[in-house]
Length: 133
Image 1 (cartoon, rainbow, N blue to C red):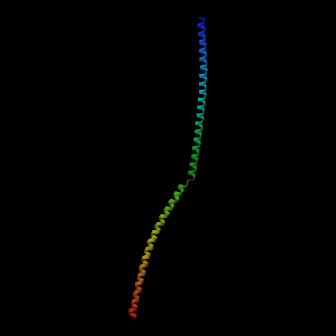
Image 2: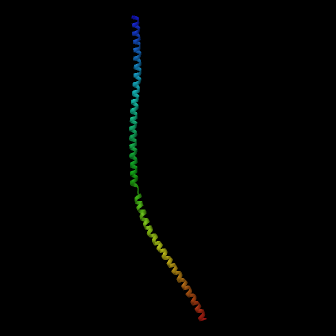
């Protein structure tokens, strides 16, 4: 029985040592994995914060560019000038139409007077030939 007890104790001690060694190996492996996971979590958080900062900076730059563009935008002033020019153009168009009508009337009167003078000249010429020849 002593021998059985010695083998039992030796097997128990050997199993316990094997269990202890396995525990140490698994524990060490798990601790390394936990440390790596913690490092990755920290890296992801740092990158997330960096991305947020970069996005905020980019948004601020875009806002500044838009504000600069708006402050330099002269479209309203140009639109006001174009509208004023359009109104003046309408007035000029109306005056040109009236001048065209007046010119047409004057040309018609000039033709009528030229025809009257031409007829009067022919009548005088006929009168001279008939009465003075």
